[in-house]
Image (cartoon, rainbow, N blue to C red; front, side):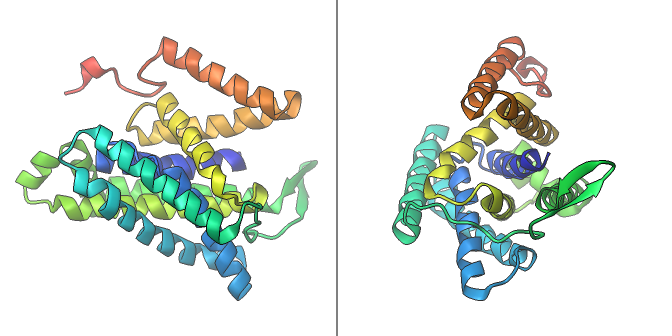
Length: 280
């Protein structure tokens, strides 16, 4: 559940960026790694615990999300989506190579969110770090849902995602809300990087793996569906954990990809996606 919740934050940011930009941001996984690297660097410099690092990492990656938008997404808004694909792939390579030069290839450990150790409950040994990830991830998911569904800002963000031409026609500053969505996506990616960086370490080459997991979660849940992406990510985390424990990591990856192919063969729109023919 902890792994799935961390993946859920990655997938949630991925969907926000997808809806805002109208194209896939292939640098999103590398923003997750960048968040972990920022946590490692600030933690080594200040010796702050993971909880204190959260707002710093979120702010740094929100800024990184805005920079990514300014460099590789918004200048290409009028171009075909393929242009954004290529630009964000190039941005991902720049982030990966920059981190490799700065950090080296050896994995680093991000500060723990809630310390090590475990406690017993109902005969189960529950790790402090996984429980903290589940609680924090759930709180962030609820906060993002509240922002999108219950605030004027969120309604405008969703209006821009649904139809930016109509949103502009009714007076919504589209560019501002696109940047806000991408900043929020970056902040969620950074927090996910901090959460994943303690248990699964931080290495410059992990971005493609995180990107693939987010892509699979969104494909399973339905393109553009926030609840679908969250449930898809949680399912991936639980599936990987159980299959890996029973058969090993290699079989877990193979089984995951086979399961994705089967699901999409039966429901190409994803488990919670809407058939294209039903869209208005």
